[in-house]
Image (tube, rainbow over all chains, first blue to last red; front, side):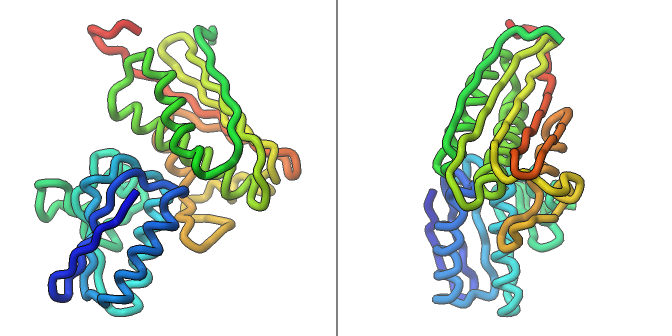
Length: 111
Length: 147
């Protein structure tokens, strides 16, 4: 599991890779939060392209980052979830917190 | 329903075993030639149940998690995940979507995911004795499959 961040002006993209479960969530959370604090983006994009598995621990991670960002008036966006990850996100209603763009399908959001 | 095959394993409640447990269960079920979506559904449900054992049942200790997988007639898979941890005082409350006794960054969706991704879910628990989660799912039969 790893996180790579890229900052472009006010936008920060976090490229996540590996499996996102309870075991890996803590490390990911700490790395993302440190990058948020250092860069103070107005928009954080979480890129799930290289996440091979995610359970509800990933939902907790996304909800937690949403809270951190909202306190600073910033927004959250999610890109490239696999069908399995999209299914978990849909079940959790994450679309109410963040715009979710499935791979290659721009502007498709979770209902 | 007649049992055709069975696999059991016992794991310590270490978070590093979460990935192994879900992969081991789905590797056993692979003999039924499940679709990728069925594999992912089962992997996710198993991950939730095992995580519950680690986070809740054995909150302040390392205990044993007992997993059994049975292949029954009609392509039905039954997965039992049992612990001898603290038990759940109020199962109905624990199963409420978005409720988590841990708060923090637990989404409180573990049982909701298990219910949604499997065909059936049964939870039996006794405080101080432990919890057993039993899930079933019927694997689709493919026309050219050899299940």
